[in-house]
Picture 1 (cartoon, rainbow, N blue to C red):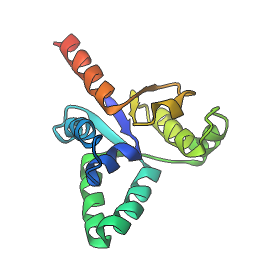
Picture 2 (cartoon, one colour):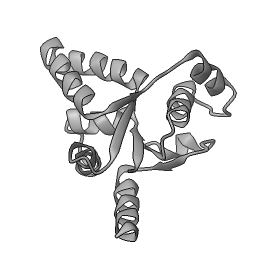
Picture 3 (cartoon, rainbow, N blue to C red):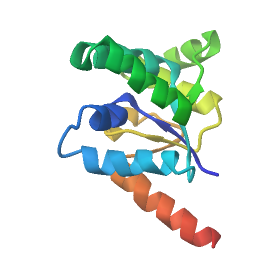
Length: 144
């Protein structure tokens, strides 16, 4: 089964109904909800999502949203090695480097983000949500 790490921006598109991105992001996350893709979040994404959601939706709703995410998604850990490898990864942005290294260390097949250009130094496949949907459909049809 495909394992994909979802960037913070993709989840925020859905949680905050950010148009025009919400449709493709919601369809990508729906694959995880239906059990067709194993979805993961970086550990730092979970804390960032809680912080941003609590400011926008309030603490109660933020807790409820994070609880749902933790039921649906695995969590790619951020360890000392993850942080050290991120420093040496060649990424311009350390936060993106940490996300990439967490995905790589956790054995993910790909990263789903709306900031593909920020992952130019990636050693994994990096897709926007719409590209991920197309790639997943192609992989699914090849396995049938």
